[in-house]
Image (cartoon, rainbow, N blue to C red; front, side, top):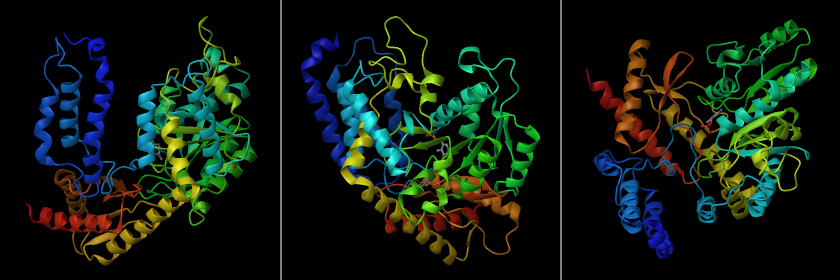
Length: 478
Ligand SMILES: *Cc1c(COP(=O)(O)O)cnc(C)c1O
């Protein structure tokens, strides 16, 4: 029998086991493949029947570390260019361990004055980092999906109010469908947020002027006029996932102001363009938004799960997400209350700690330097692709994503789509570098994103070399 009480004196020793494994793991990240296909077999060791008699702490932690370090996807390493992922800075990782060590419930002041205070400081720092005016507030949530949910939850409450309804109390029944307008860059998670909020994912009316998805401002304005004064929600996409392009936030803000609409900005990673004077023009106008969603686990390089919503009228958070009183819980205006009453979650970990740690360790300038290095690396990658005769770049590179495909002259389009899918699959199976495919303007393409603090020119060069090698190999196959 392994009652944890019998094992309590080895808590520090168990953490030392993790520490001992951490050193070699993080040191190897710069060199190891993203995943080792040969290690996949050891995943089987994680399963088995529910243990009846436990193995005890030491053996359990040993097994978890052995299998985990062998089979984990090295997405915190420098050669993971899939999705838009980011790594974890040393300070952020240590901050995250501290959050686990202290195991605070960041529900409210009464559950943890410490977590509440750090969260208050961090929300203020994030607001400043992105150049938003005083008075804005926010919520730390698990992801950009939840940040979109939180933002659009506030928008829904506002929209109900405009209809003279209280959606927080009464829901949506009896109201018309909420009009949500966006360009073709709108992210699947914004649709998911609308689906969770009861509007349905098809509530978004997409106004795009081409097959890439660039926003059709005239089309949006036409629909706003047709609404004849009824409230609408506009979603501006600041950083689209295929090529890192931006909707013109300023122009959408103009429309929102003219027609009295709510402007939400999905800036999951693109919001970080604000950190450099070289890219800040891409997010011009965000201070005119009503809500902004972003991820710290992407370009701030903080561990998962770290999204945040920034809200111009933070009082709406408490209105939209306050809970009806349980006798034992603080109410929304109670001095013992806190952030659990200002967002979708109630009990939650102190996810402010890694953000606090990374901003304290490296400051605004350290994070700006990282963003600018990635801007440079993306331009370097674009050049390498332009120089390779069998590769074709499909889009400009305004930020940190390079959209391209394998396309030697003379190969028909249908074959190129099949070939590029094969290259994408071969990349994942190979594991030295990581990147996936997308469909951009109707063509299958690769879309590496550079947002990891560890990435260097050598990593980007290796990426190009591996793509060219696998392109040659997959072409030879029938
Ligand atoms: C990644 C991303 C999201 C969703 O983020 P999660 O943290 O995975 O929920 C939303 N919008 C955009 C533009 C993104 O890039």
